Length: 413
Image 1 (cartoon, rainbow, N blue to C red):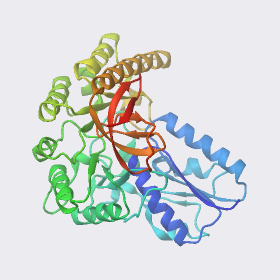
Image 2: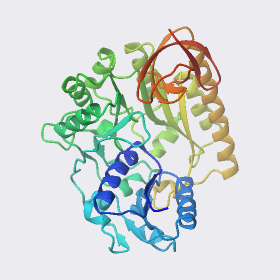
Image 3: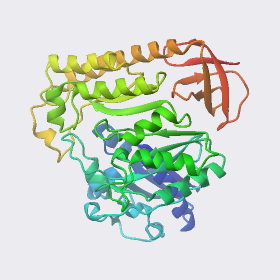
Image 4: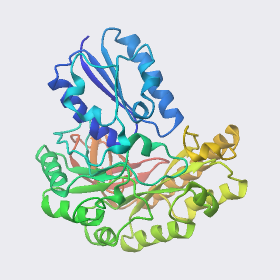
């Protein structure tokens, strides 16, 4: 059956861009087409994308199949060589209307490292999602030794404040009750703009300009870049959700230096402690990598201990994945079996930390954004199950009656 389908992998920024892709593809008249918006953060993400491309071609043999996203930007020839693929678009080209004309070159992917501006793209909503994403920034100027993403996204560049406010207003007018500010390195926001606003001043500005927005959330933060204005907003603004996700990556100082991160262990712990001091009930999540090259048992134990010492509510665990072209691929590697073992140990610690965090919420009130029938997330991003009737996108006041291993049970207060 002919249809236009967008398949999205990876980050919230990709989710935002997929809505722009949908609009451009529809305007170009594509009716029997599939666009796969890939991720390149790990080898597994790319493997899943290739597997999906092959499956989609089997299911839709006559559809126009376009591949885009970070994996396509980094190595367009690899995806163009797949017999299932009709066209490959780079990360800039995927946001340009002309890229979706029915007939075009097989590869359309320019040099993203030369891009210096981010064009704003207004979207009206996100198909099947209760919360909406707002792009505030693109690219990254840092070169963490494990990360391939700067090669897929280019240099850091910020969306002007007025364009962000316009996007936020449009989404609120379309009945979205929670927005998430997203980008590749959002704590770098504003350094390239004339007035050099910071992420904190942006957050304050969006909340002030869109008073009817009930909930604003932030995507991943670099602990080395959190500005003082953002700390003040965390402390003072109840509409900024009490949930921060931090790009910590490791808990051992030597590994952090080898990663070329810009914080050390004690600085990460200090950020967590400050957040809890300013907002005592705040929930903290973190990205952590298991098995980075040269990681010894003692180094891994430092990262494992960080989960408890930082009192993390959520842990997003990545087994180290060597990405071709990054410095970490040239470092002495940890055996894959040991990487898997350490990742499993970290996930177990994160699961215990989550269960403890959820137990502490029992007996409290929760404001739950309904995602689907019987399920939503609280202001702390805790998963909540409930039996009350509610529509997706509605904010439901509930009392937390009990906690399971991975979710809360809420009842109408």
